[in-house]
Image (cartoon, rainbow, N blue to C red; front, side, top):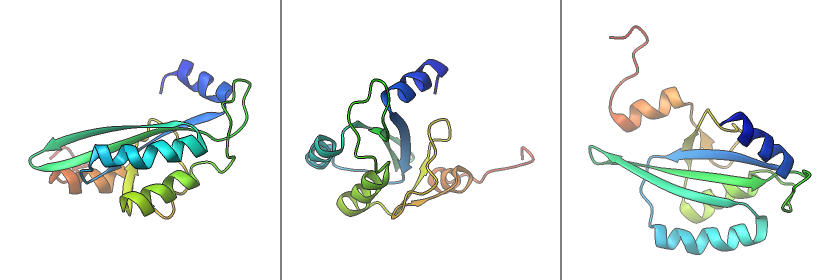
Length: 133
């Protein structure tokens, strides 16, 4: 995240989390889940998917109001908890890995947050090598 974006997030009372999930989703159905969620809790979620060798990773990129800021757009003051609960209950997501260049929440419960070093080798089929081999 760029420094200017971080400043705007803080002023607005929002934070940005991106969760990578090793699965493919019906985007039309996702709209029917995400629209009412964000109407109630604020923010927005963007979806991106990449497929490599038949394996799909979907990125759920969310900006949520998590506190009051000078430019605050309203907040449930519950942080990301409702978002992770919605991902679990409505999308069936049980685990994923967060983008380490964005806000990293302490917990994604009930979604298990997997360390990138453990997530990406499973998805790519390539082991992580520490010695470059």
